[in-house]
Length: 213
Image 1 (tube, rainbow, N blue to C red):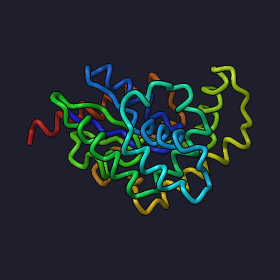
Image 2 (image 1 turned 90 degrees about the vertical axis):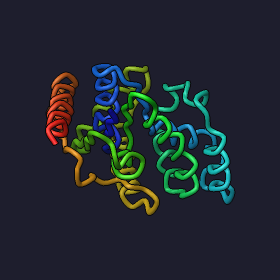
Image 3 (image 1 turned 135 degrees about the vertical axis):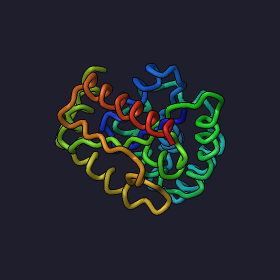
Image 4 (image 1 turned 120 degrees about the horizontal axis):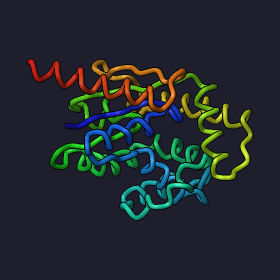
């Protein structure tokens, strides 16, 4: 079973994808970490003429070892860098096979990102699109960063989230939108447990319906 979980930053998609993976005993890939790892690798090139070429080279050289430092990769700074490399067509192409191979391993997998249900796994058994309003997403990300002992400028973080949404949605090489057959789940007013229960219910209902076809 392949489960695709898409949505904007701090919508809860990663937490839900991880929970679904545990519930169904499936491997999980946070595909956003791939772009964040590429972004971190070329941070010294940001806004420089060689940025695009450096990002393409980094994407082609990426392997699992580059995803080890999750704390660094999930920083707000890494998110900004990720959105900048994600608009580069050859970067997305270089990372496509990595994601697709993970998804199609025996038994299936759970992947979360921004274009899993639209580009990476358009044939996924279940697709979820997670959303939440910007203020709620800002507060979640702020608490996450503060739990690591980091100081957070909520005003700046809110605008980073808004800017990233705009950049992701305008990405000519992306697929950041709700697939026609994806199930929408708004987590603005849901805690983690309630959101996961709702996500599991969607998976169960979808798979039961497909079993009858």
